[in-house]
Each structure stands twice: as C-alpha cells, then as structure tokens.
Image (cartoon, rainbow over all chains, first blue to last red; front, side):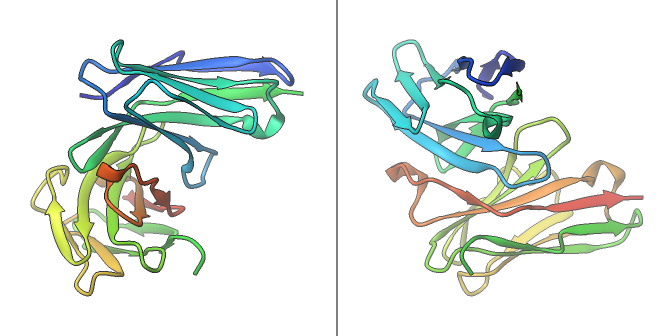
Length: 108
Length: 116
C-alpha cells in the first residue's frame, strides 16, 4: 500500500519553513526520506526507525510516530538548494514503497 | 566508482525491440534494487537481489521483463518486445546490507527509456 504524501506541492520563499507529511494505512517500522532534483538520482536524506525518534540533517529534520502511522519532514529556513521533489518510502519486507512525492519550489 | 553507475543514460527503441539496461552498484554493496519511475511519480519497485540471488521479483510488470546479477555485482535489466507503456526512467539502487537493518539506498541517475 503506497504511503500518502501531503501536500502535493509547495512554493516557498527562501528562508521560510515547510512541513511534508507521509501517512501509511499499514503499521510502520521504518521510513526513508529522499530528495530528487529534475533529471537526477534520488538522494538519501534520512531513515527513521521504530521508536518515535526525531533525526536531523543540517536544517532538515524528521519525526516518526508509529502509533499514528505517519512521518513528517521539517525544512527550516529553506535554501534555494532545497528545491526538488521529496519522497517518503515505507519498508515492506525487502522493498521500499515510495509515495508520489511532494514538489518543493523555493523562490529567491 | 564512487556511486551507482547506469548505462545507457538514454535509450530510444522501436516498439517490439529488445533492450538491455546496465547497473554497476557501489563496490561491496550486497543489495541491488531496480525501480521504474513514470513521469511525476515516485519510484516503483521492480526487483531485488542479494548478491547474485534474485530474492524478490514481484514488481516486474510482465514476463517480458527479466533481470540478472550473475556474479553478484553488475546487474542487467532486460525488456523483451518493448511496448510504449514501458517508456519510463529505470533506476537502480544499491545498499550495503538489507533494508531490515535500516540501510540507506544509493541511487544511480537512471536510464530514460523511450519506446517509439
């Protein structure tokens, strides 16, 4: 079952904050987050494992709530380089099931 | 090389032709995955190898799709009798261990396949 991401698209001005949500109808054990720029490979951001932990990577952090079966990605003081499509992925057996993505566009 | 390498970068084929897409994973990575990505969508799982063993091929859309990794390193995805609906970006990813231990996947730039 594909996780659902929201919003589908976001337009921000440089320096603004954003939150991207990822929800699953199935029990979550881990969530992967990736960013993909047009024509490029998806780039790994972080993995969250069962335990409700929050992780950070520069000004990008994420939380994982396995009870609510959801994860959220937080982008603080966004930079132009943050533009791209963000995918969450839930792990089922030996594979990642990716959401449809959230397109983020940062304006100068 | 430093990252996952895929070739060719672009492939144009006529409907009915066979194509072969190559993936060279990061050295030492045990796991290798193939995904299909349609325009504006997330990557969709096709198949998974652990070393040379193909452990999951549940995502392959039809028996026209075939993947192999004979020596546990380079992998080839072959599509026979291509159809227009096969047009997509095919992504390869590798990881040091399996997903069960929380390993990140490292993706190649993909092969953009266009079927005329």
